[in-house]
Length: 502
Image (cartoon, rainbow, N blue to C red; front, side, top):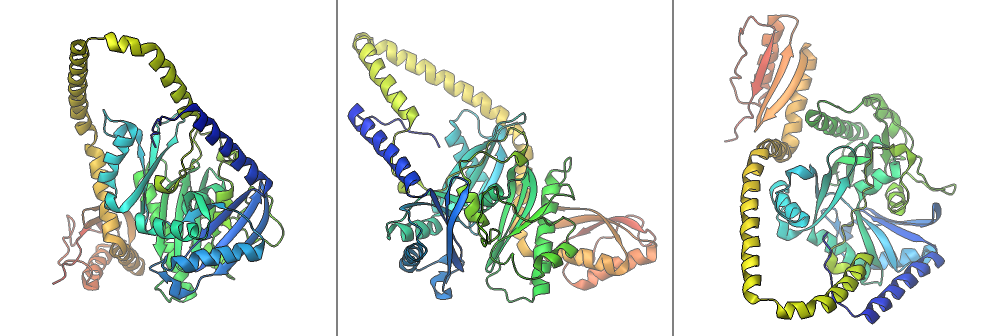
């Protein structure tokens, strides 16, 4: 975020700097970093010093304290965290906390598509209004430039609901515990896995996260609720596998020139990750090789680090990135979602330098300012405004032409999000009916609510049977427009439209 240059006297600045130094030294003496991971079923604490894990502890959350995946009883949450710290011997007034991505929205966009002629923060805000399916007055908006290698620089934009953030932060602060870093679980998990390319499946009792990591960057971060489902193990595994495959298909659709390698390792983390036979059965269902998590920290024997993967990722924040990330030139993601209203103000080195410069410049230029002509200043100001407005007008004209492909991509993405589970079920029907009859499926695309795909049968009779099966399924509007050459063709393009409910 853009930093405001604040005026303060030198004595106050020095005093604040001394307090900041004492806070850093105090944290080092009292045992390093404490992280907390809160979900709808449990609270997990982890204490580290450097790259060594010291203590850890967890406590389950009572179901009546949670509503829609969010802790509703702030008083009970704060008291439970304080009691857990006391019983485990973990001491800290300031902690790093995670935030579920269940109600959050994130986008990674190239910097070149941001509106021209505006400061970076203003340009990000304007773009967020277009790409975020949330009302900006109900979310806290955070952003970070995440890539500065050989390719184009990009920006990560995250919108987090105000009520979710406020609930968690206020509950902790009521007990004297101040989170000074708030980070998405998906970002922490990316840091814990520490791979240049990976898939992450974080399974909790009430939700699961799917993360696609490419060049050390979480290109896709999805969190899906499962708290109201009571499925058998086989059905749960199938739902996890289908959602993982759909997420990868979505990534490959927009990166057709560099799709995800089938040998990309899959890491399974979360509270449910240690469930017997889970990994074995998922491996038989998925093509991606499942690898054990090996966090770049020294962990004591007995620590279930796959369950504490989010805590470990938080603890790694600010440390040197792993050599597994390669040399792509990407900056480590360290976006802090904690709103400014909850952050204690402290002057940065940039602000102190700016203050010194302003004092010196004022002492030299003030006499000249008094002598300067008001008329000349007014004329210069009008000339600058005219030039700026004229330049901005030309840039906006050029930008409108450049942003047409982006608007189309955003529209397609919104269609997938809006269609939600219905789109998933449509794909499953297409694949299932094809599997039964022996139809080979080709490329599948969508435009609005229309699904178009290519298919081929071993004979025109089989092709007609497949078209009939799709019509009889009842999910799509009938009759389905047949391809050219029907009924004596054995391959072609089929266009499906969802059945209109009456």
